[in-house]
Amino acid sequence: MIKVRYQMVRVAAVRFSTKMVWVCVAAVTPLQFAFAAGGSLTVSVRDEFDEQPVITRMVLERPDKPGRRVTVRKTVPAGVGMVLDRTAEFSLPDGQYRFSMIRGPEYRIITGNFSLERTSLDEHSVALPRMVDMLREGWTSGDCCVPTSPYSLPLRMASEDLHLAAVLGHMDAKPIAGRALDEPPENDPAWINEHATHEEGLIFYRDLGSNHENIESTHRTKGAGPGANDGRKLLLPVEQMIQLGRREEVKIAIENPFAWQLPIWLASGQVDGFFLLGDWLRLDRKVLSISNGRGPQGATTTGNQVMGRWAEKIYWNMLDAGFRIPPLAGTGDQALQTPVGYNRLYVGKPPRDYNSNPLKATKVESELEWWNAAWKGQSVATNGPLLRPMLGGQLPGHVFKARPGEVLVLQAELQLAVRDPVEYLEVIHNGKVHYSARLDEFAKAGGMLPPVNAKESGWVTIRVVTLYEDHFRAAMSAPWYIEFEGQPRVTQKSVEFFRRWLADYEDRLKRLPAVELQRHVPFVRAARKFWTRKAEQVKPSHD
Image (cartoon, rainbow, N blue to C red):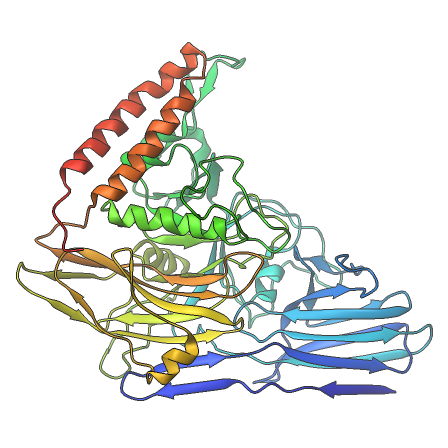
């Protein structure tokens, strides 16, 4: 006999008049199972809306052994937990169990517990409630950096409702019990690109239209070098950037935003993307310090959120130094035990008709189209909140142009769905908080955001930060840019931020042997000149 008790938590959907702002707040729904007897449990999972079977991630634990997760034979590991492929039979030792079912950020989390005894056989079907369908609203999810794994990527992607993955190479997946092929069901399509390579904090992506020749062939060059026993020497990362950056089919992203070489990489002019969310934000463990790069600088350098805020600060300084580099998000090369798509990028295309639905994006139709939109910055990076923003009727990445003496009045509009309690919603204009409110304050204000009045070049982004305690969990739109007289915003403070970084890196390089140091000298000198020219571009600001 099975006793099931549901505790329902109402989902609040609030529509504010005039500016079409939707806020959907969903709390975790506990689901309690009580079994009179059972030694084997069969669980099936379906979507609550259409009743179709779905693949999800399940985390199973013993309450008497906190922190130790239970593994189940014939399932695919998914970092934290395992893939539940629509249905699974669990033959487990007697005792109490606690579980969670998580299918990416668009579904509510189902939690509960059950007990198993020695004899009997039981079955149960669980319905997963969806908070929002981002794909139907025109926003397609992707993980921009997935480390290779012997475990089925299509299944892991389906379990997180993820639609695109860029994999760092290829690895044949282990056979899967009960499946003839390593692929998701037809209703869970996935785009997987295995033509990305990782080199010391950089990722080199190849567009789909290329001839797919081995990109790694350019990572070495002839000539003797210290310690080289094959007559070849490894190129420096910046040398690889310069060689590969000349090829139209290759895009280059900074996967390690804390790398000591960052000012040199930016000076190369070859950077196409920047990881705002990466392997310093992970579910398997907390990351509180940097082992390969420059650590947080400033008053707040401790706490669980420090790494995420440091990456954000670096990115804002890049924007204030005149760079228009879109944000990316992904698992990262050092987070194999984090579920794929935990850090993800949602991209969309501009709607065909803004007047009919000013908040609607247009769904991308191919992997190539997804990446083109990502490189244009038509995106939101998130590891939790689901933010769909517009500014002045445009998606992120748009460049607003004006002439001297004009004032651009830009109205922000957004839709938001969240599972975690939210600390604040903010509109950031040129690195400063233009508007900040808790969700209850936002609701009391009628869901209206004050317009951004721009009198000079700059940028705007919208972000939502949660109260999640283990690390920085947030969503941030890619920037919108404001351009007067065809010039970006460049501030003295941000230029000095990177000049100081470069000087600290030079001090570290001086510890190298003289022969090795000489390889770095030309690039350091070129970066010095670059940042000096940047300083000369600084104009008086109205800030």
